[in-house]
Length: 182
Image 1 (tube, rainbow, N blue to C red):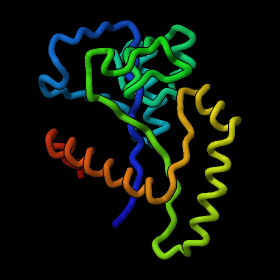
Image 2 (tube, rainbow, N blue to C red; image 1 turned 180 degrees about the horizontal axis):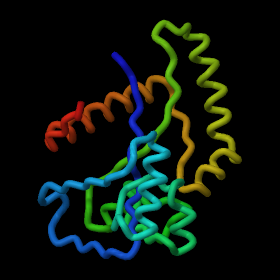
Image 3 (cartoon, one colour; image 1 turned 180 degrees about the vertical axis):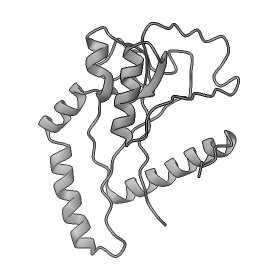
């Protein structure tokens, strides 16, 4: 099975526009087209953030680290943290459920994968070292200050998590009839 990660957007933010939830989410299809020049995800996020700050775009979803400084400075207003519970360093930002979107939870995550056939001893050593680093107070504190979490997942737990993500987002893709543009 080919493994991959997909950067997923995690915080809904907006500038001057106000969003009113009239019905339960999702009550109808929503299309959002943002004309931005081609580039990687960092380039795309930077351009979209510039459009948001200038008022050309009313809102978008992104990960907290890309906007937390603007939210704390009062330049952007976070509408919801797309998780099951409030973030410990952003307690004033409601969860998606508290904002009228129950079940709308999205996590951005990163993982380290090894090639098939990597010796178990190597995987065990990598896991041990990564756990020590990721669970260290300094790394956890730095991540939380940026609006993120640092947590270690053992190989079997990560495998199960990836499979659940593939299943979840596969359903979203199918229900929304998302097609890859050539």
